[in-house]
Length: 235
Image (cartoon, rainbow, N blue to C red; front, side):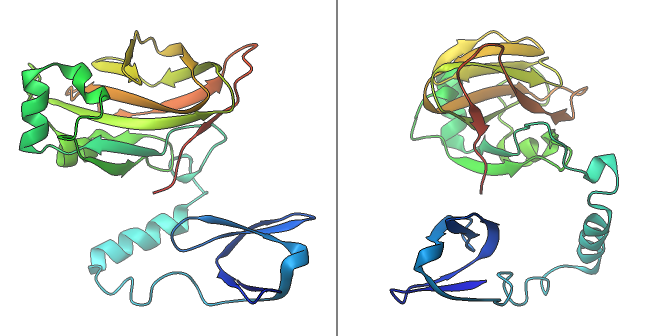
């Protein structure tokens, strides 16, 4: 929809919610805009934010796959978004020569630092919350492991309203290492961690083991913890 304020400003986006006091829109760059209702002069339906010709470059098979995905969304377990708080947006370290050299010359924990040699690209979990590890192989497989398939490094972010504990629940911790900030964390399938107020960066080293094909991380509230934790998403 398109909204015009009494000051003459124009805002366009998808309606996220309407409260008693404001209108919340999401623009084409995935940013949220809060528009006070008493400042709205006019609001009208608008054209889709989807770019014109977006499907023109898809092959026939890609188009068939897309239509099938949309038609099954919400109808089967694999294509239904549950209520679990799972990490859906990850960052994967690109397998550049600079990154490989930096890791080889030091140790895996270096991945948790702000080394300028590291370039991070987004990767996304499937609807069921599982991150396919073949994505990591394509983007960020580094031959720095004794295992034949190597290792990959990835990150996610948790936003805590106040300092406190949260629980990380993994589908498997085999071949998995974690640092919060630059502090190492010993992992169990359900691991209680201490978070600082604000954004907490979690860095993982993942051994690309033959028996592991996906990674899934769910965040749960810790008992009696004052922290309210949100998973940082977006692009």
